[in-house]
Image 1 (cartoon, one colour):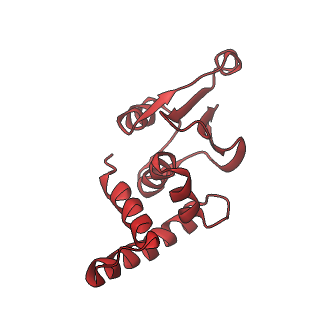
Image 2 (cartoon, one colour):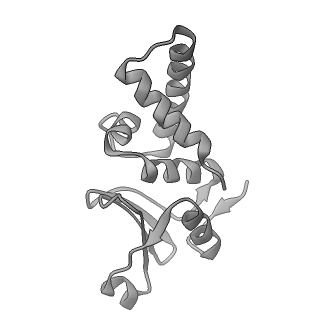
Length: 139
């Protein structure tokens, strides 16, 4: 299985999905790279040597040295969602790929049920927004 590491290939994919570099002076001195999505001041991805560290509100959510294709899609989703949508995805827990993927599967089912029953409640709307954002991600 192919994995992505903290390199230029991953940088190109991040930039393709609305990420911009937001390096600080300290990052430049340490040769680290920092990324965020425009309009999202709370979430950051730091390339620290070979490690990728995901922050939300300056709190480490996840640290890894590689990403599978599905993990990369979930990372991009996490960064591109609005705060309330992220909370729906995380459900009050730190961001973890396995839990996020399980939540995506549950939201997919909720989304399908909402379509069949023509539901328009806030929960169905949030599921629809998350699933639409997830399905738009291209690598």
